[in-house]
Amino acid sequence: MAGVASRIALVLAALAMAWPRPAAAQSAEAEALFRDAEKLVADGKLAEACDAFEASNRIEPRAGTLIRLGECREKNGQLASAWSAYTDALTRVKDPRKKQVATDAARAIEGRLSYLTISIPDEARVEGLVITRNGKAIDGALWNRAVPIDGGAYVIGGRAPGHEEWTTSVTVPLEGGHVSID
Image (cartoon, rainbow, N blue to C red; front, side, top):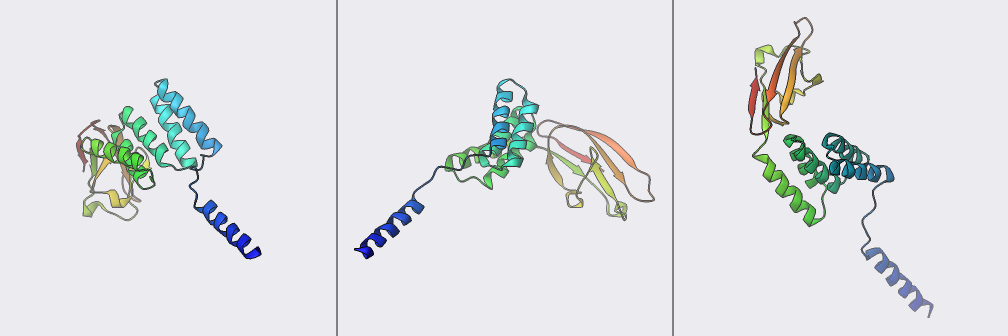
């Protein structure tokens, strides 16, 4: 009889482990930010809403949050940021419906993206050269490449030890632009 009871206990334990469980809830902090973002979207405060979705995702990365961030960035006219959020969602999505939403949204935006190319000729690549966009250094792997970017005004700069620092301004169209800086 003890053998039958232990077998039943093993079967019940195996069934309990295999039984589908609801998805884990977001942390309280991430959930609070997500809800704040939803309210901000409803109030038309898109920039603040997008920042709240992004903060929620930093605390607890989730495909659904990235999709909502993508929708927010798209409504706010930040197509490259929206496209990036949708494609990031695809790296962690498990739900087939969410996967389809993110795939369709990324494809729909891709043809509308604007691109910025910062061309650095070989003779200008001196030791210690730093190229910046709005004050933030740009990785050298991105030089001479068309990179998707949100439309808007940017200040491109360069500095290197022993050389004169320079800056220039460029405006990238909101959609379909291809801008190059030499």
